[in-house]
Amino acid sequence: MRAEALTHTGLIRPDNEDAFLVDVEKGVLAVADGMGGHQAGEVASFLALKALSERLKEGVANDPLAELQAAVRFANEIVYRSACLRPELSGMGTTLTVAWVVGSQAFLAHVGDSRAYLFRDGHLEALTCDHSYVGELVRSGGLSAEEARFHPQRNILTRALGTEADVIVDTRVVGLKTGDLLLLCTDGLLEVVKDEEIAEILTLNRELQKAVQSLVTLALERGGPDNITVVLGAYE
Ligand code: MN
Image (cartoon, rainbow, N blue to C red; front, side, top):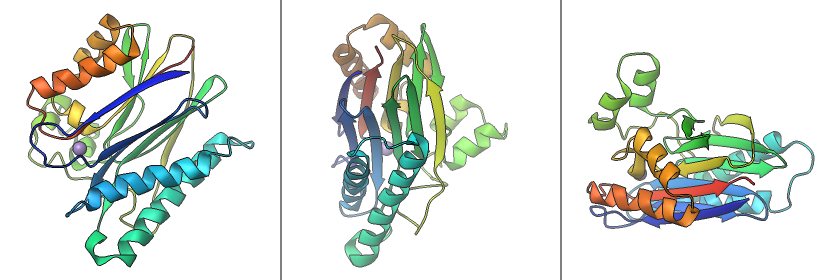
């Protein structure tokens, strides 16, 4: 696997509370979008990825999905405990979306409203469901995907990592084919760039670095209202 990643503060926010993890050797790709006042969001996303990386560094034993799920729950515990110990971090949390490529399969774990996509044969498919108020409205048919992008309550999460003692983790396994791309990104990209535009950029930019740069640049051209993080992995 090859991978490229880029994160940008954007043009409005004072700090970057997003973080990413790319470990090509271990096949781990992840993004996290932290939240909480006074830099607590930065701490949450950092701690979550550090904990995840520590748990996955031994490599896979026998059951990647169970091990990944345990690693995400461990990350939850680390963020939650840190928030309980330090009053200035109280209430912090983060999204966490992970793809762990083992053999010819991608094992996915997900909490929050960042996303993972599979780009195959020119077609972009979302692999995760947003754990957000508007995401649930879209799934129940009460709101279109386009309306959700501009909804005033689009930032309300229904599930986050580190805000409670334990967390329910969505998991999924995807069989990979040569040439597949795995895209992980935070809502700072999705708020201003449509899926069709992402697909077009991935089609036009065969080099990973250029594709990642183009996605971030487009989000900035659209005002960069939030931190933007993009991780792109190619299975070969
Ligand atoms: Mn965000």
